[in-house]
Length: 481
Image (tube, rainbow, N blue to C red; front, side, top):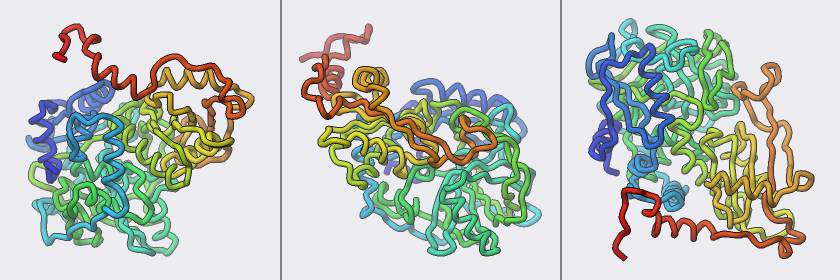
């Protein structure tokens, strides 16, 4: 890896010309508005907000970090010019189970440069933005990695959950039903015990990405990214909870959640582009300690209408993980997958196969809809043949309307895993949703009589663009041959 922490990562991105410094933007409005603009502009730079009114110079917010394939490659330690499918394949290699490396527990780290406990705790010390106008408060937790421990197995899980500032010493935490963090929290509550928790509000982008993805049950994200890095990830022990926290973290809040300590949380603009939940009582963390580096950096990853930052990198990574789960489920002949950013990488998924037997397409689309990478809040799954480029929405829909017929090509799954933030479900009926599955492959029984398609296969199309794409650029000249 070319970087050790968020600061190193910013320096590497800056050397590539991909960082813009933004001075004087307000936390009340400007930072949220600018971030939304960046999220919805292709190839937009990383923004480093500084000189935020009301806060010391050096108390920064970083937004739109891993929003391009180039910066995703930087984060994964891959060649910057790597193409889509090689990136996905290499990511799968780097995250094979036998590559996992336990973290290295250090005695000290930069995260302990500044320590607040007791009456000194002040979460308002950091410039948490008001990300969307209708939010219920300021959210310090958007680009966060929340560290928790399973009370039965000791498994350390690192997930991303939203964290709202109530006041100087309290924050509220929302976790969606079914998520690992919710399972762990409830396990403590059912025992009548408080739930230890550490909220990391600034960390290297690799750890943040890991905390947003479907890391296998029982595998710690620290071990997972150790495998990607090829060396142990450095952690230190949080003094109050005993949880491992990144040694190079920028900001960490530590304490315990209690079942009987709740306060209204939300509303908050969510990843699908809606305010899908109102204000609701959620557990409150009485922050017992705050640790931060000198001149701390808050990682800001506020949800916006898709596509926004994580959707841009999860198109690659969740699609790769989808391939892994389908292979593990024993589905043969799966050639590609794409979880579209406009659907939050959950609501619209396309899988391509080489059909091998009757019912193969049905098997593939049901597994894609219900495996761990696709089960939570999915909506539509399309299965196509491998002559279709899964990343080309026009080509996918061409397959749907020319190879599918509604009476034989559609399935619906009822009462699948959804949650309170699903915007399409009636407010009184949230919890389950349905899935539309579309078989856009040629009918198995008479596929040899189906009309031949016009045009090249995806590999030929990609090769043509590599060799002849200069024609599309009015400023380019023909390269030497």
